Length: 210
Image 1 (cartoon, rainbow, N blue to C red):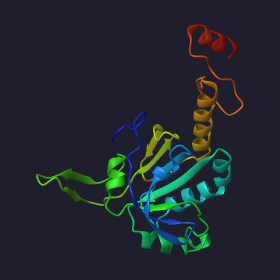
Image 2 (image 1 turned 120 degrees about the vertical axis):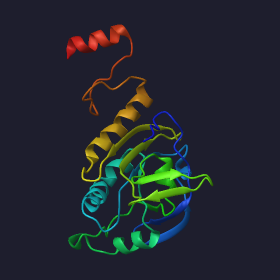
Image 3 (image 1 turned 180 degrees about the vertical axis):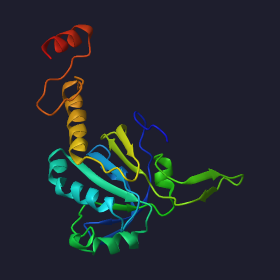
Image 4 (image 1 turned 90 degrees about the vertical axis):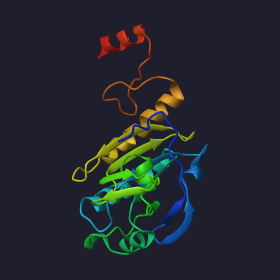
């Protein structure tokens, strides 16, 4: 697993399904540079069990991300056709119909590999080719990327462990608070809470009050 925090988010172009039913070529996060924050998350596989709960959870809170000028983008190693098919299946039947944010098809596995979330046993052979065994799917990785394209937060869960969307929103709030005020966010910080001046005196004053 690689730590990308503080580094440029790996760039890519891939097919994706947008607006729930449109397959597009050459989808890229680069379109948001200088414009929006990005929550980019990976999930293991279409037509599975924990995954639809996460995708619907992000959709149900999508307006909260939009209020924060933040886009949500999902990605798995399935094909764009698989994404499209799952998007046509009703929620009541285990599908993800109603998901409106982009779902990227990482069919070459290179996006998950470059973000350090590709599961399975793999190596680069003498021909610089990816040699793999086992299921090559993505762990539940989530990356918060700022407008400059820098990863500012990441978390990676094993497949049985679903993520907390409210925590993703909290991290967007924390990043934007830091960007706007220049103050840090102490433990258990939430939007509306006091920030922390990163000086010895600032820390002492904060701790004295809390």
